[in-house]
Image 1 (cartoon, helix red, strand yellow):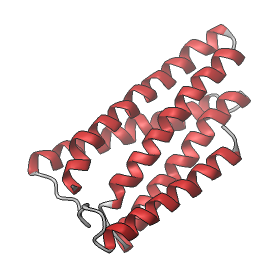
Image 2 (cartoon, helix red, strand yellow):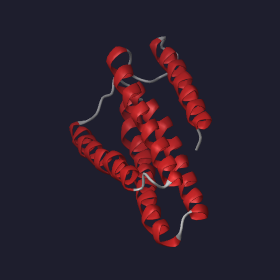
Image 3 (spheres, one colour):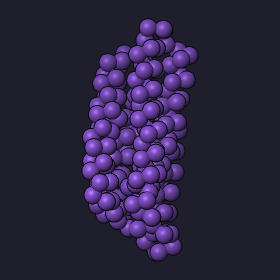
Length: 164
């Protein structure tokens, strides 16, 4: 969890996204240019997005503010929030000006990285934090890890089939 790691990931994810987008645009990859959800799938996605906002964004913001004076915890949630903001901005821009189906690619790349990020955060606080703080921070990180791991399942079972 460093600036270098975060920047390297953003650059790599952007290059992959641009390459996949180019392949889709030129008909070289069998992925639709738009997302086609069923009505039930669309309703589920709408609920899932609300859950993602509550668990994946609001909770980490609260944790970041609550433990701001703890450098290691601030670092974990700071890089987490930085990358989620970059992901949201990238998805918005790409879906507006290029291919909406690239949101699935972007979501998959960033979610996989986020799972790794959270796992690294758990390892970091286990080593550096006192026991009383460790339990609560660890619980928040485990909840986030469970949610984003579940998000990978949603991506592979609902989002990817909607673009293939």
